[in-house]
Amino acid sequence: MERREFLLKSAAGVFTTSLAAPLPRMATEEKQDNPKIIYRVMGRTGLKVPVLSFGVMNTDSPELLKKALEMGLNHLDTANGYLRGNSETSIGRVLKETGMRDKVYVATKIFLARDWNTGKFTLEDGGRAPGATAENFNRLLEQSLGRLQSDHADILYVHACDNADMVNFETTLNAAVKAKEAGKTRFIGVSAHSKVAEVIRAAVDARVYDVVEAAFNFQRDDREEVAQAIAYAKENGVAIVAMKTQGGARREGDPAAFNHKAALKWVLSHEGVSTTIPGMTTFEQLALNYSVMADLNLTDEEKKAVKLSSAGKGGFCQDCRACVSQCPKGVEIPNLMRAYLYSEGYGNPSHAEWTLDTLPAEHGLLACRECSACSVQCRNGLNIGSRVKKLKQQFSLYA
Image (tube, rainbow, N blue to C red; front, side):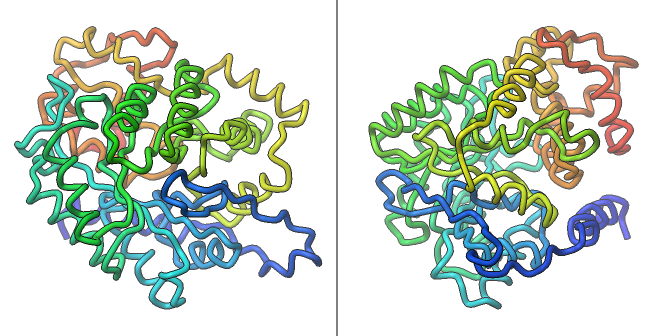
């Protein structure tokens, strides 16, 4: 088969074959003394969800999905591009097999092309991303619903709206509203990786969006500004779903290096956050995240861990974009760093390659071919050059 097809099939297979051994089937709450599920209502949607939801980005394992549903996690978050569609397909099959579609809230996202020079959506195709037209929006939505084996999503996001202009882009906004009016989705929203506070406020002020999925963790430089925007959303009935809660840190090596329970608790200490969607690939991770609901209060040890990790920033990109102007090729370095996070932090090479593929050649990793080494300096101390080098080594198409 073609090399790209082989790579994608191999990458997708990683998620179903490398899972840890299943945990013993969970007994009753009384016998196992498991924490009771803590629910919050998603703003004006009225949806009641656990504070821990399942970000189905890094796995297409039906066994892990079934376990999460058995444990009472009734909110599954996916996207049209996750695992090249395998995430949605797996969810659809599991929900059909278990007959639980009407008991589970499914959220998915539509990613469309943007002009990397202006930072706005574009009607023209860009990389593997289709242009931001109503036709492409509806085509991808129908594709997602087909994979999910459902006639509707519960939440539909316009994916990666990273500034106020993208939130208010007339074509995508109107397409989302019409999808809601047509019953293709119950609620609509936007997701944001950068300029998060700006996006949250713009979504609230647009008066049409019900939910914002926002990157939020204690290592972000903008955490106080985002926290204030989250409070503003809560005041106005707009739900916040927190993503990137772990800052891209993996649960490997020294467990003291990063306290994942503390990271989740810190995010959930903000009452405006309706739920969190950490990506989980093993039963061990599922159990650890679930255990947070035993007590959302940070212990003294966890408070120390938050302070320590905040100072180090966890080695992840703050998306400040100060690096882009340093690059003579104008490469979208923050998106390369996001691809690195997906590959190294999440162990998801498939989504890393998808992220690289959405970038046009002149602004993506292909442009890095012309440089023997990257001289761009990160003001937050990331070694951009070594990460770019590793991406080129891992994805030889771009070397």
